[in-house]
Amino acid sequence: MDARRVVPLAILAVAAALVFLWPTGHPRDEAAPAVAPDTTLPVVAGVYGGSWEIVRGAPVGNRARMAITEVGDRIFVWGGAQAGFVEADLAPDQFLQDGYLYDPAEDEWEPVAPVGFDLCPLADPVAIDGGFWAPIVVWGRIDATPDRTCIPAAAYDPASATWRPLTGEFFERLRPDHVVLLEDLTNSGNEASTIPGPSRLVAPEIGLYYDLPMGQTGSLGSGPSILPASAPSRTWTGEWLLIVDLGRLGGWEAAADVWRWNLGGTPIEANGQDIAATDMGVFLVNRGMQSAVLDDPTAMLWSAVEPLPLRASGCLPEIANVAGVPVVHTCVGVAVYDPSSASWIPFTPPIGLQGQLLGTSDSLYWFSSQVSRLRLPRSGVVPPRRLPVGLTNLVLPEGYHFAHSIGLVQTMDADLRILSEVHGFGVSTPTGGTCQVLGSYQPFLDMPPPDATIIVDRPILPPIEVLDYSQGDAARFVLETAPTDVIEVRCGRYEEGIALVAALQWIKL
Image (cartoon, rainbow, N blue to C red; front, top):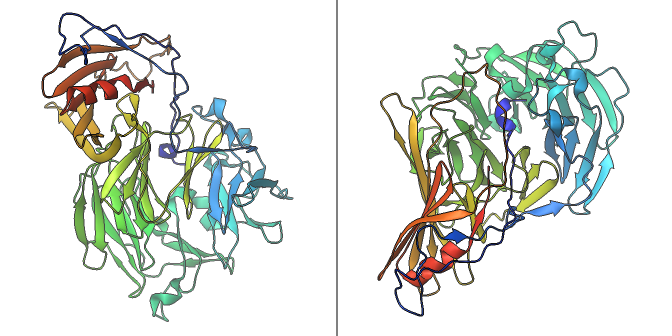
């Protein structure tokens, strides 16, 4: 499995309830005492993702690097390893050889039938649902066992609960993250198409496709004239197989059966890009939390989208199509694009940041120490009460509501090293005003050498400290939540600032 899909981080929630220390030196008036610098703010335990629900009784809790896919109205889960080994370079035989099907409507799990033949223990396996015409395909990083005599991949039919082996060049040469499933290709209108019909797995880099219903490997004909230079991201729109690599855009146009590699550059920096086709167009994001949408693939017309309100340091973004809506996940947060407001809404991640993401037709699933689900309607996303910013969560008091996102802004030095990142969101107040909550993060620039032994110490963290404040008709509070992280709260009314500051909760990522 691609390393970008696994997030090796954890949440440390600190349980410490502290009493406010109201100062006497800077009172605004007796009804609204000030919060002075060096005041400590309360820290609340059990800081988990608001609006997420736990899927009870999941038999795959505490697993990582599993093969997961939506199949019809159910979820298929296969293999994986114990989460305690998630950061290790595991041998294939350390991955489990069992699976389950989950029915969300009935909230029931049932075991998948045993394989019945010598399937290779699949490292970092991936599952792909072939759709109406084909079964589920499971295979993984089998290059770790070059002298294998086992079967490199398998197809599972849930209707008959049977497996069949998959062999040949397509499955022996490829890692599954190099492959895209093309569905419903009968709409191409080209009888001479090299990839006719539905349910084809396509590998552009080596010019091959695999016909799932027929069980045959074929050539892409003219195929791509160049090979992507790094680790491209790809998506199927129903008309185009689009491939983004180092800022270049290319792909295969189904109707014309033509590969095009000179479609121009993408409008955002080529830095850790990921791409996904949704009901609102093809969305593109990068490591700098920049985003854009491709409205017309044929004309290659892009539109700018506001930057995501997520921290960029730590890992690459992953974008998924969930209920037709783009959802971005990083090491430290989730952002959902709201079509009604044309903006990104940040969500606190569910318990455990170490896990795997799955987008289905109506929900976002997070597989970690337990399985969590976030339901997403197609028309308008309901913002959560608990909003992430920097290394903290802000639980909005009664009467306060999410208003808008403040996308990521980075400051870099001459060597393009990130000096600081600022992002956040606006909050409407009960009196009709607006507050801004901004997280400012300064990454550690002096990292140890790659071969150094790093011992991670997780002490009980100190409470949040108020570093500075101002008052009058407006209010500004500066809060230190970690040595590299500062939160700033700006409100039009001082009382509104007091209520927001008092609602801060601690998360250590």
